[in-house]
Length: 142
Image (cartoon, rainbow, N blue to C red; front, side, top):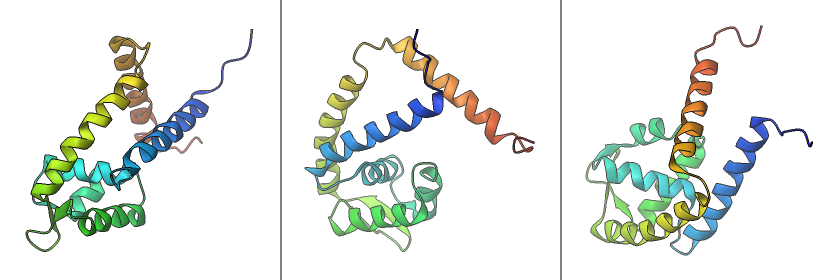
């Protein structure tokens, strides 16, 4: 029997596969995975502060990448600033994001092929607990 690869291997490989597939798919809309995530935060909280976008997505990208994504969605007309340091979708951005949602739904369906919903939920809960165990630890492995 072949030895099982460790969870870190599969986490890294899955994240790279998700990012590569989404970047390819979203490229037709002029987006990256992180820009799409920025748009979702803006959609969920119209008038959101830039700092909140960075806070919500801090685990997904570094500050420079998030700033670049915010600048890109502003430059491409997806979002606008109703006030300094605040973001909201433009009407055209909202319309285009609805078009993107159709492709994202198809992507999600593809990525879940052969995976029952209860197994997906179990995987998410396990990863959430692992993060809680490690992020809550103060000994750094000592």
